[in-house]
Length: 95
Image (cartoon, rainbow, N blue to C red; front, top):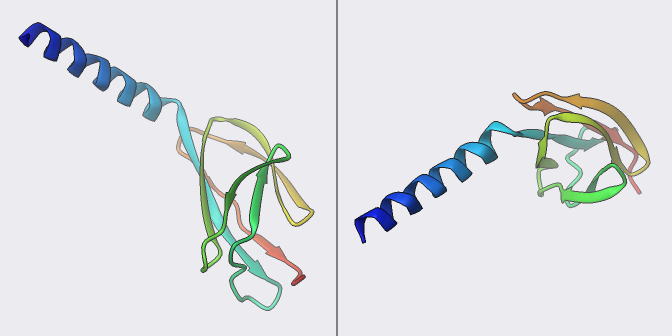
């Protein structure tokens, strides 16, 4: 039984390390042109909805490092996401 626990522990540990080594955080804030936060706005990554802003306009998405097109209400930015992560903010028109 102890061997089973040790094996499970190492499997869990290796999964945890693998997921942290290869993921990066894309985060930022979306605000309107007047500076007020844009709450509950969709964040698209490569034309797929990956997140929504919270009531303060902040969002966060975990991705692998790489190049992505990040879009909010038709405003698109092409970014390189390094392992350490990146902040990408948007200023949008009110709908």
